[in-house]
Structure formats: structure tokens, C-alpha cells
Image 1 (tube, rainbow, N blue to C red):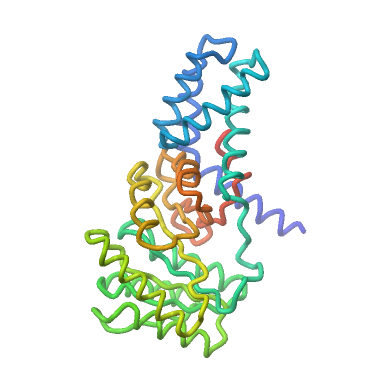
Image 2: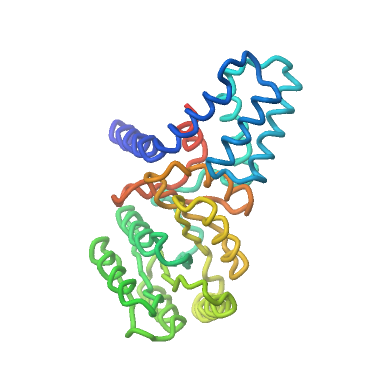
Length: 316
């Protein structure tokens, strides 16, 4: 029990530290928004709207939050302006709960299928291959047998990086020569994983957006060949987004959700940005659960997203 508490404390400290820039940015802006005000009035709400939009929460999500606070002000009549941070925390937590960003299971939990196949998508540079490596490491650490498929066959660096992560984590990497058919790599990976009784399969894919039709066709082909081996694969299509890019992450989410059936999100690089509000906005706008957040370079800095702890770290 003591060891479990220590682990949870370390995890919370990593979360707090990772969100520190966003937290400081929002707190300072909220303080200015309520300066000299004794209650939450129209001017305070206008200022708060500006704070949330500038923190990359997104316009539509910001308007939803403001509307909720307006209803609360109307109901409670005279809310102290100093309570605004607490109100914002409550309404954000409520919004995330409604938008299916519920607490995800941990790496040690039982998976809904064996092997559980995760196809990872996202543009180059968002931390996609690194996220795959960290996922593999955490699953292996939890006692699971993991196979990685190097299906981003257009970049030698991506394949080499995945091989290094495989060695570091203890996962098995399946690869072919550069320029090979990505679907062929995926097929070989799930076939080997099934034959060797693996628990988890993670497939890397190319991150090109220059031609959406080609991207859509390629991802569809990868999914179709995997289904020949495992009919319900992939059970998870994980879109990796760089949180530090703010509104650009929204655009990437829009493109990839059009290209394939994304059902989980990983938002990386939150430790180096004041734009952590993007987690709230993307979850709300796309109605896709945020499953993982990246808070630093270390393996343990990729965390299963816990909406309650996230909101607590951001607003307390």
C-alpha cells in the first residue's frame, strides 16, 4: 500500500509539474479578469472568455463553458469573483465527463481483446513514434507481451527509432525494408503477434497529410489487411497530437478524424507549453476520449489521462 501511494504521489507531481506553464498562464490571466470586481458580472465573463480562447481551449468550447457559468451566476445570483477559479474547475470537469473523457484504465488492467491492436496515427513531429515506445515500455513493465509494427516505411528514422524503443522496452519489433508496403508490415506484425500469443500490438503509420485521399486509402488498407488475421482489429485507433501547437492540433484532429475512425487521443508535449487548454477543447469538439497525455521526455511521463486529476492540477 505504501509503495502504491508513493507511485501515485510521483505521478501527481509529474502531472502538476507538466501543467505548470499552462496553470501559471491561466491563473495570471484569470486574476486580471477579476481584478477590482466583487462579483461575477458581464465584464468578468467577457474577460474570462478572452482568457480561455487565448489558452487554446477553442472558441466553441469556451462559449459552452461561459454559458454554463452564466447559468450558474443566474441561479446563485451573487457569486464572489474570487470563486471564479473554483466555478471554472467544476464546469470544466463536468464538460470533460460529458464528452466521454472518463478515466481510462491503467496499463496493468485486463485488455478487452488478445492481442489488443492499436493503430497509431498522426503527423510527423508530434511525438508519435516516441509515444509508441513509451506505451510499449509501460505495457511490458505491466507484464504484457508487446509487438511493434514499423509500418511507417517511408522514413528510415521512424523505423530506426522504433527498433531502439523495442530494445529499450523489451518489445518485439517487426519491420521490412524501406519503401515496403505499410499494410504488409501490419499484416506480418499481427500474424506474428497472434502466433506468439502476444497481449498488445502497436502499429506505427506514416504521418503525411499532403494528400488526404492517399492517407485515407493507406490507413483503410492497413486496417483491412489486419482484419484478415484478427477480424475486429484494430480495436483502437490512437491519434497523437502535439499540445504545444495549440490551434494547429485542432486542424490535425479534424483531418485525421475524416481520414479514419479515430477512437482515442494522446496529447503530447504539454510540459513545454502554456497551451494545455487544448486538451479540454479537443476532447469537447471531437467527442473522442483523451486516453494519454505526455508530460516530459521520460518513459513514465506518458500518463493515462485522469480527467479529475487533470482538472485538479490545472485549477487548484
